Length: 542
Image 1 (tube, helix red, strand yellow):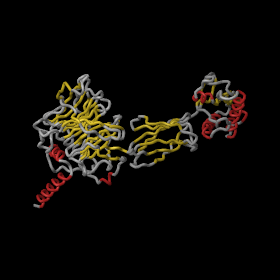
Image 2 (cartoon, helix red, strand yellow; image 1 turned 60 degrees about the horizontal axis):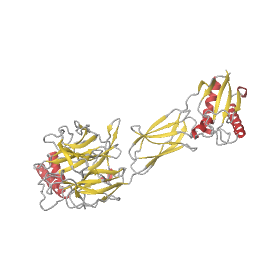
Image 3 (cartoon, one colour; image 1 turned 90 degrees about the vertical axis):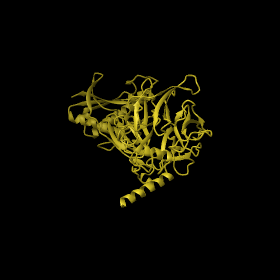
Image 4 (spheres, one colour; image 1 turned 60 degrees about the vertical axis):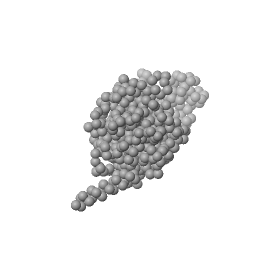
């Protein structure tokens, strides 16, 4: 008896919630999709999920009515809307929703994101049945759209049509696509930015939950390949719907009743990895999601888009909102150091890549040996460093916080071994360049690491003798450059002597600008000038 009483209380409570929260439309779909009132969402308090790395500002888009409005992508810089607003007094009422059957409308978009008064989009695509989401090919000459039957407004089929050349929006060659199945509803189509894949939701037999997300390749003739389920990382035992992609095609957005969910349908994002597919989704946070339903999120720009929600204080069942994400910028910074001596290493190339190895940014360290990059919250990266005379290094890094912050990470490089080789018929100790301050002859601290390699070779070969040749670029007077190169060669010799090498084994010679490595005369680039400023270690005898 106690169990039956609890069941009655549960039903009454859920009926009350459905009257206050999710719209009749979602409630009708929910019952149809699950065939059960007893499916419980995995909900998490909004404060526990928090902003989760996002800072959305949500504004009424200025076009909402007391009926349902859903955004559905863009056509010729206009937003296409699906709405059940009544046009005329003879509008047919959908018994499943209590509203008119849905039609397509188009709306102009102002600079601030507000939408104009809607106009009917297409007399061909709008019918006496219920229209739902649509999407356009990359060239916008083909439309893929969903439509219910007149008998069942909760089951949608997917069609395609072509834009008649030189027409003003006249769609022709309508056809029902082969991926449709009996007793299966195909909904929310979205074509990726590259134009070769169509994402959608469906309650196909292999679905993990009521509705799952799928993708089909778009063939050359516009037909679709066999749908592929996006898998357990994205789909849940709950309903997963409304796929869309970021402008660069690297992120999948969708609505789900599953995952870590504040309530109803929440918006999520999953990074699309070239190596491992769809990453575990992240809730877009409590600055956009509520205990009500947030669906149909479409980006118009990197951080600006539209969503539909039946949240409190709206004008109708579902309203369209403008969503602006004030991007949370984080920073990672540090120094590049020699592993053994902790000497700072200027002139190091530091590269930031995403976890798929795609380069995001690079920099060259200055005299302070510091690097700095902007990163996004809760993303994974690889930071690599390259410097002549050192082994390349790469380290993984995860931006594990969701708020504005600065991470600190020093990079430590290990030196390479010196090489003895013939260069221009001379036997040399070949190593990276020796650096001096501009117009000075004192050895820079970073180059003491390189000179220590020469010390190591000379100590390993006690009879080896060297001549140290110093060269300058061709900027400045010849006599000045010759004198400067002599002093630089002398400085290198002094360092070697101070580190235990007998002076009798060493000679120095300055050549000024007389022997350029690259003979670029007066048209030298910065790279060519740098190449001509060099120190060479020539072996005389052993």
